[in-house]
Image (cartoon, rainbow, N blue to C red; front, side, top):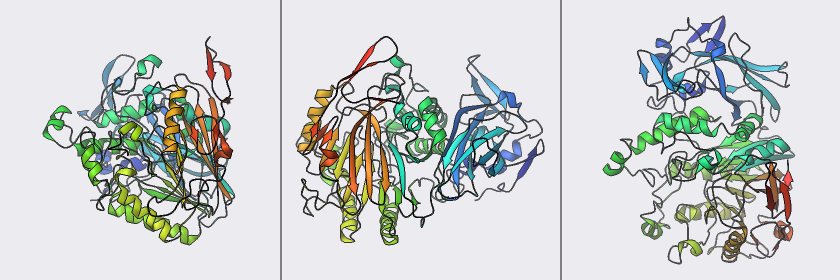
Length: 626
């Protein structure tokens, strides 16, 4: 049943405010009442005659934009009477309970709506206004505001700002950018690619560095934007003042809202959201570790797990996580009748078709849950297994085929987990050499994907992957089916760029030394023909710069994440020539700063840096202070 109140308008102080224009009232799906919010019911119990005192309201977590189209973009903010989040809409006689950190007690506050105006302009003084509007928010959606700015021109930079109605209470000024039309001839674009930002392990310096350089047009986040663990389960944030709240394993709607809100206090993450439009997708930890269609590594719909986790079922936990994610992220609801659909695509001129997959939550067959590894190993090549479910998989193949037929230069595929085969018997042992939670656990699905590309001669494919907390650069190869020369790259159908984590630790040990990490990297590179470069040591990110002639991936490592700083090290650069379908030789120009490079060498430069707090940090590479 659709909302009955979508067309309702209320007037506050002479300003016409629209409920339905705030997308979060009908996200993630207006056709699923359990996930959406009934605007009709919210309007019925509100009292617009008693508006909030604007001085009591705060823009608690900055602004954000995302999912850019040629003529529109999503804008986000939060305007609330408290920095704390709504406690799962628990009400007492029509009032919400919020936590006041000053008095350290819960207080009842009126559920009157908050009226907010937004303005979009071509200049940073917001004088040349191209779109504006007035909307409501309320405790029902955690006082978040998400609107679609319209009437925009393609591939154009805009500035935007929110204001509490009838006041001078303004949000920070945000900057965003639309995409080109699909048939526009764009010369080049830049994308910063991230994954795995774990709050207690360090500061999110990687998000801030492209802001300081102003080096990209868009940001792609491949998932693990948050982690669901309690402090101490995975990370010890008290040593650096980074305890994720609430300080426990999270399950409820309030828990997920509060965890995202805590992450969004990191100043570099706030800056990235404020300056660049984001195109995000979730991985597993936005809900729980190693999620799949019917559960996760900790919640498997068993009676024991239900009791252990306070009576929260798999479905309820996922519903809470999904709702909080859509409330807080600048992301569109792609299809209103599909409450878990986050997979979508973006055409960026004739240059790029960006395809964002969901290889975790949507319809994934059972994965490695730690206790069933041998079973998953045995069925890893079963033809019935899918990472995506048949609906998404068919959409994926159709999208890639249409991209090739329309003549887009590059097909860039955002896949949370590593696509290429990776023999990790050095870690898992010879009997189980693969990571079955990645594409290696769904080999038939990968074979179907490679078959589509090879059989239809679809080239210029670039897979982006995260999740692994390490950097991997490979030629895209169908091993065992197509001949491949690891020296020249002949036989490949594209490349894969896997990125390290923003802060999440090295998979082979959080405190691993540079020498140990590079030894592991050498073993991995040597024992995987298509793997051309691998680095385990550095946390960081990479930038992908695309033109019609080439794609360049520039990897940056962070010397330390236990303090907030702007240091970064250019650790490797890679080029893919259009039509070559392989990494240009010599790979990375034959020299990298860290890790292990096939056919090349690692050159490290020692540099001493004053950290500014009386101590000294010694890096092993060329350091850039931004």
